[in-house]
Structure formats: C-alpha cells, structure tokens
Image 1 (cartoon, helix red, strand yellow):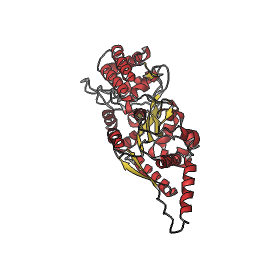
Image 2 (cartoon, helix red, strand yellow):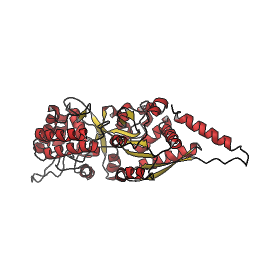
Image 3 (tube, rainbow, N blue to C red):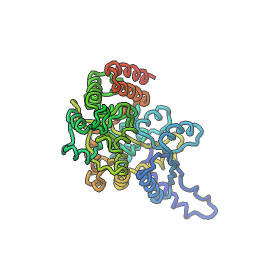
Image 4 (cartoon, rainbow, N blue to C red):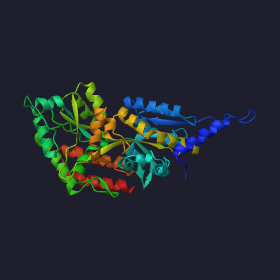
Amino acid sequence: MRKTATAVLAAVSAGALALTGCSPTQPAAEGPTTITFWHGYTEADGDVLEQIVDDFNASQDAVVVETEVKTWDVIDDTLLPALSAEEGPEIVAMPAERMPVYADKGAFVDLGELYADDENVAEVVPAAVDMVTADGSQFGVPTGFVPLSVFYNRALFDAAGITDFPTTWDEWVDVATKLTFDQNGDGTPEQYGLALPDHATVANGLWPSLFYGGGGDVVAGGEAVIDSPENVATLEYWSSAVATNKISPTGLDGISADELFSSGKAAMHVGGPWMASISEASGIDYGIAAIPAGPEAQASSAIGVAMGITAQADDAQVDGAEAFFSYFFSEDVATEWSLGSGWPPLRGDIPASAVESNPVVASLTEIAETSRPLLPGVTASVDVLSAVDTATQKALAGGDPAALLSEAQAEIEAALAD
C-alpha cells in the first residue's frame, strides 16, 4: 500500500537533508519533483488557489507545483490529446461531472488508497466525493461542491412589499407573479419575477434540482428514469407557470439568465457563488436562499469542480500530487480556500462559525445540506444533460412534457448503453 502523502513528504524531505551532508565525490541530489497543474480559476478564487500553491511549495523542499491557467473549455478540449503526446499536466482541475468521463478513458490515477489513508482527505464531504467516483473508485478530489441557490434582488422585494422568501414551489410562483410587471400591457413584461433558464443552465443542474423536488430523478441505479410520472408533473407545473403567469421569458440559457438578473430586470435567479460578484458589480443588493421545496423534497443539484492526478504522472509525481492534496485539505488551508473561493467548506468537520466572516459562504453553508451530486459516476453525462436540455427547452416553448420526456428517455438509455 502506498504511504500516506504526509509520510511521503517527510521521507523525501529527510532524504534531501541527508544528501546535503554527502561528500563532493557523491552524486548531487536531483532536486524536487516538479508537477504541472492545469486549472481554470481566474477570478478571486484563482488568486487564493495560486497563494495556496505558493505556500505549499514553500512548506517543503520535495515537490514544486507549477500552475498553468486555461479556460475550462480549453482543458476539456485539449487534455486527452496532450496526455496522448505526453505533454499534459500531472494534476488537472475540471467540472466534477466530467471526472468520470475521463476516468472511463483511463486518464486518471485511482485515489482510493489516498482516501483510505490520509486523515485530511478522509474528512471531505461524502456527497462531494460521490461526484468524483466511478465504478466504486475515486479518481479525483473536489475543489468545490456547492448547491445551486436562489439569488434575489432585495430592492425589488422591498418595493413589492414582500418580506419573506418563499419556501415552497406554490409560494415561489406566487411571489414571482407579484414581481412580474407588464406596465404597457404589450404581453412582454418589463420586469420578470424569475429568470428561469430552459436550457444550457448552470452546469445543467437547474432542471435536475426541480425534478428532485418533485420526487423524480434523471438517472438512478445506472438506469434512465427521466420519463417518470413525477418528472412529467414537474415539467408540466413549471411550463404552465411560465406560460400562464409570464414569470420568466422562454428561450433563456444560463448566461442570458445571469444578464437578466444583473440588469435588474428579473427579481430572482438560480445560480452559484459567482452570482455574488456579478450582483455586486451590478450594484444589486442581493440575498441568497435555498431553492424552495417541491411537493416531495427540498433538494438542489450541486455544482462541483475537482482535481485529479493524470495517468501521465510517474510514481514520484503521484506521491507529490497526493501530498499537495493532503495539504489542500488540511483544516486551515481548506478554510482559507472556502473563504477565498466563496464555496462552502469541503471538509465536513469545519463548522459554519469558521466561515461566518464571508456572508456568501456562510449563506451557502447553511443550505449545503440540500445538495445532491449531479449524475455521480455517469460517464455519458454530456449526452444525458443534452437530452434533458432538449426536453425542457421544447416544453417551455409549448411542447408536450410527457412526449418530450419520453423522447429524452430513449436518448438517455442509448447514451448509457454506449
């Protein structure tokens, strides 16, 4: 069994110290193990991640982690070709739902022993670990796991005399209707109560969240279940709410919904922690709340990002990368990352009081228990979510929810069978 990451660092560092006492006729030490780390963090979260890497490098002499910042799309497009040419990274971060896809192609090292042996990694929230698990093995460690939540415009709520945030779907639609204004009567509201994307939503997690609330799912036990009666009822409910009450425009994707909210033309929007900085930049006094409960559950699909060790890494690089992961999940560093990135703590033993200095993190931590991993272990996640996208977009445009979910069922079954 491989040594724990802490033990590896201690052993390598001790060896380096011993070599410094060798006579001049003995070969010199080869120097620290160098590890290339690709990631797509570019805002404040990127700054804090770079600081954590710098601090790790300064904390020991055995390993040097060198970061390369790329967009998430570039990472997705170029990782496999780069690994095939042996020019890829030894550590890479990517959206967590993509991790099983690459693990299925043999791109990542199995980290099961790290989870079993390292006391820091062992404290990671189990639901976050589910997102980086495929066929019972862990192929990554999470760098983010956060429930989708509702961002709302306090000024618009105050102007409408609404003092309490809704807690159920019916209350949510009622509040959204009160916040929708068509002042000139032309059928197109100047202000919408809700920006509800019907396709290309935040990590495609919005509609699974609504399906969970209605008692349904997308894939369960490895089988497609998108055409369940519960999901048909959910899609009918929201299609009717949009068509009848005009609470949201149709045809919105995630980016358009962000823009509608940030322009002050929508009172509510479902998103992730980045909406805090978008709202602040737009001068919006915002609040954060859990997605209201559906008839069967209160649940939210969680957005995740994860990092894994690629199959390109040699033994020394694997050991060094695992040492970095152990450092990343040490309690102080994990807290630093949470406060700097705006995501809830990844360790389950970090109390909410430790992050209360960041109101966004504190709010998201309070509702984190509603989180569910999105399509854990499903290697065909892209095709599955594409089928969901097609059904929801066409349903909100006036299509028949039952027929559309039946078509999506067939597409998802075919994707899972490949």
